[in-house]
Length: 323
Image (tube, rainbow, N blue to C red; front, side, top):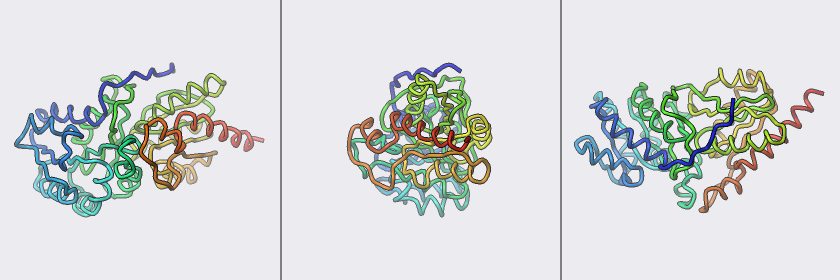
């Protein structure tokens, strides 16, 4: 498999998701959109301009917004609720849990500013615990698109999947890697690069760091397999098993707290099914800070350089096990 080129994106995934939402309104004429007074940032205002009778600004009251969405969904209408990830997963988590997940209602979450992609907005807007919150809720599905094509497909996937779906999106444009023919489904993943020495799993923005790291490793004779685990819950255990059968080592890198993220989930799976040398990169029980996105990734330990460094450490452990 040849290296996947990283093309500079011309819009953030939050806008791609919202633009597709406007288009999809003619396919599904029932769903409504609720937002929490930041429609200009999440781009849900595009939907409001196109379909004003199906668009509701609920103000800075995220818990009430989710509760209202649950009421609409209980009456049979799918609803998209939109805000920043920190507010959806902390201010509104009781409503998400009790009024959406418990009755398994068709409420879909447009969650912007995932992880440190909020960057200069600082800790108050950096959703670095959101995956932990949402994956722990029964009935919730969690999807994290890496680029604009994946974000557009995530809208369709969310609306067409029964029950609550949380879609984690990014603040700024990064890169595009997929084409319009690429298919996505709940419980799926994409093999972005084949390798034999180590499996690198990521999702969202850190997929690009993993691909860049794999290029560096290849130049040093190390063959890394890179998987975009865009469906974080449920995750693609079949793809993981097949990859680890080849490589025998696993590195998970994610823009999230290292604790209780995808890394912890995959580590548990490995302990039960395929014990291998393992490491996970993410925030190490700390808050970040306001700053430039790339510098934050490097300072807090999950940039491409950190992936390269940690891969080499893991391969040393792997070689030691073979002795």
